[in-house]
Amino acid sequence: MAKQYDILFRLLVLGDSGVGKTCMLLRFTEGEFDPSHISTIGVDFKMKTVEIDGIKVRVQVWDTAGQERYQTITKQYYRRALGIVFVYDITNQSSFQHIAKWASDVDEYATEKVQMILVGNKADDEHRRQVSTNQGCKLAESYGMEFFETSASTSSNINEAFTRLTELVLQAHKRDLDNLLGSLDYYLDNAAQEEEERDASQSEVPSGFIQSASAAAEMTFIAKTFYDLRATSLEGDPVDFNVELNQLQSKYPHRLVVLGFPCNQFGYQENCNNGEILNSLQHVRPGHGFKPNFHIFEKCDVNGANTHPVFAYLKDKLPYPDDDPSSLMQDPKFLIWTPINRTDISWNFEKFLIGPEGEPFKRYSKKFPTIDIEPDIQRLLRLTKT
Ligand SMILES: Nc1nc2c(ncn2[C@@H]2O[C@H](COP(=O)(O)OP(=O)(O)OP(=O)(O)O)[C@@H](O)[C@H]2O)c(=O)[nH]1
Image (cartoon, rainbow, N blue to C red; front, side):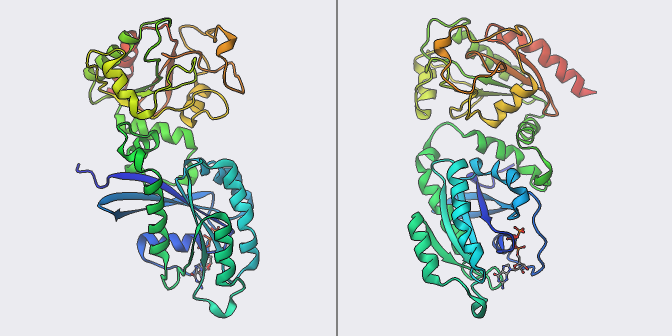
């Protein structure tokens, strides 16, 4: 199937209940306005493709519930958003005052590079206005954000606001776009595309990702932590490790997806930047022109406070390697993350095998030869055939 877009990313709309977030989204993505107010439950999302400077961007805009009781759910989504629209209602002073609270939540949870704009919605309702345009401008200025007054009802400025935010995100990530490595979010979002209609509020985030990736794989995939490109003192052989992953991937090109996760938490040994990793593989270790035939993602944390949700989920489901349940980090000087947990990945080369329905099947220690996973892969594939 031809690719419908060049890049996909996630925007988030935040603000008090009733300011018009859902209506803005509906207007932006479908050009419609529905005056009835049905409070969003948890989160929901809508998609739209916009073209900016010749780049087709598929934006997945997440609509969050403004109501306080859903906020533990919605906060989980902050970290994965590349752009945020803060919305208040120009006819509602307290929704304007609450922007400070929304912004401080984002400060706490969102990523550093997140792009943000401020929007005063319901600009059509001039006679009920409680917040002046000037007040909105000033607040936006104090946060270093761009400011828009919009109306979901008349459609005024809605496209402009979302398109501008998309542009800001593209600008902020221009270098990443040129990067050879794909981001994990991008990969998984691609995999999830066919499930767009799924009720987002029902799905538990990490398992949703795993299932999406697994759906793309048709059957099974291996997630692994990556290895040090230069280390010589590791147990196991990184050369074999990579070559064997390539072997497995080429043996099951359609039914297995191998995913590689570089990680710098083991002796700071993966200290290449993302743009250098493929070159290192090719020319340094294993070298000799080695090219992985599987996906390699940007570096991520697999242990500690910033553990990627995929690894948090995998460790929760498979707390220790099947072949070496007591495998722990041997040398305390390598424990560079906090908090430390018994389920932590103890070194590079650990592998996870995930079944066709997205269920984590088995975890293998750093010592377990990668190629020896094949019987388990075959077992899962046989099960799937019936
Ligand atoms: N006049 C006017 N009314 C609007 C506009 N946008 C939304 N509304 C009305 O505001 C009410 C709330 O809109 P929603 O989009 O459901 O609000 P929300 O922010 O998504 O609310 P939660 O889902 O509870 O967080 C609805 O009754 C809409 O008709 C607008 O631009 N102008």
